[in-house]
Structure formats: structure tokens, C-alpha cells
Length: 300
Image (tube, rainbow, N blue to C red; front, side, top):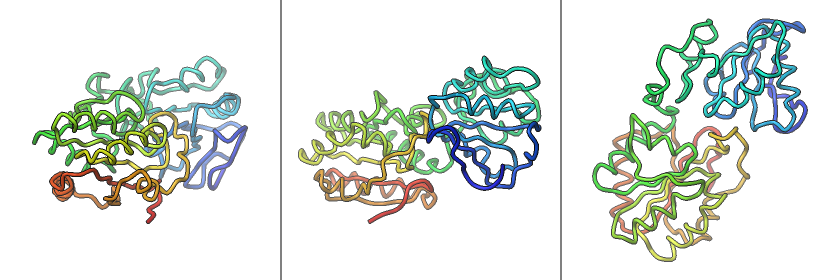
């Protein structure tokens, strides 16, 4: 297997390698199966890799891939559903390792170092409760630090239950509420009605799924809510499904938002981001900040 992603049984599964793979026979050594955003931990490795963008309706290609390798490491950001599925279906000379086997921490974010140790056959050193203290994906670190600082200064912060939910946990503890997909703007709007300056941190999927009615309400009511949208183009915490290709800025303008800024996660500095968010808060009206990363195109 070489080159870029190749479709297998259906649109939900693809095999991806950024480097030429060492897999040249019907049965070879180590391999990795990643689910959704976990692919970032193996992006630059020369190893046979299957990227699962969503939970597959047909597990056959997953099973066949694992059976072609001596050891397959399954990397999942959330519950180890794929690892559990494979452990019940792959036998013989092939072994499945991951969170369930103890080679990766049972809970919490994973790093490239964790993957290195697992591929070397070592068990996770940290107990599961401590795993939650790991920083979230680095691309949002400066933004999350800035939001946390504003919360400490008295702002109310509501998140979604996608990528932004990491604000609720150490090292940030930077949110007051995270209720459901698309809920952040509604919750922040209600806080604003009680007299609080509020931030809503929501993903692009959550916004399109059920967040837009609240955006219309916030805009029409002139509530002091800063809506921060993480535009990564995928459902990063539920399997990596792609978000509809929508130009969000004109859509949000149509919802009544006149102040819309577009930032890029890679260009953010914690102190400068806090100052920019503070400026938007002091303006006293509703506004939106679209924060793009590599998966989300910047548009006008």
C-alpha cells in the first residue's frame, strides 16, 4: 500500500499513508488503525495505516486489514469501540492492542509519545484518571488559554460537546457548561440575558447541526455574546465525519451577525488572543470569530 487515501468497501473507510509503506506482502508486521482526529498522532509515520473517518457499517475491511498484520494498534480519542469490535473478530497470528489492552491509557487525550511506547510493546504508564490532565490538540492551546483567562475574569463560557469540550477539563477548567451538540450558543445567550458577558465555543458541525437558531436569536436580541467557532471541517470527536462544505461567514451574516472575524489557529498567541477576545467583549454586542485550522479552508 502506498500513496494517498484509497477507498475500500464504502465511503466511510480509507487507507492512508503519508509516506511509502513498508507493507509489501500479504502478511507483515505492525499496523495502525486510527479513528477520526486520532490520525494526527501517526500522520508522519512510515507504517501501514487505516484511517477510519466514521464508524463503518461493514467491519469487513477493518478485520481484513488487521488480519494482514502481526500487531495492529487501534487509536481512538473516545471510547475504544473499534478496538472492541476487532478483538472479537480477529484471531490467529494477529493481535489487537490499544486502550483495552492497556497499551494506551484507558481515557484521555493521546500523544505521539504514547503511540511510540505502544508500538514498542510497552503498557501505558499513567493511570486513567491522570490521563485527562494531558493538553488537548496543540492547535487550540493558545485559544483555550485565552478563553480560560477571560472566564477567570468573570466571563461565562459555554462549550459544545465536540472539540471544545476539552475546555471543561484540566489543564484548563475553562468552561461553565457543556450540555449537548449545538447547545453552546443557546446556553451563552441565556447567560447574557442574566447580565453576564458570555462566550460560546462551538465546532462547525455543532453550529450547522443545531446552533444556527440560537445565533439568529442572539443577533436579533443584540446579546453580548462572542461566538467562537472551531472550523476544522470534521466531527473530530465522533469519528472524523466530514462537515458540509459551507462558507460560514455569509451564512452567519444572513443570520444577523454583522461582526465576523476570521482567525487561524496556527497564528494565535495566548496573550494576543486574550486581548482580541477582550476587545470584542467590550464592544458589547454579538459577534463571531471563525477559528480555522488545517482542515478548514479560509474564505471571505
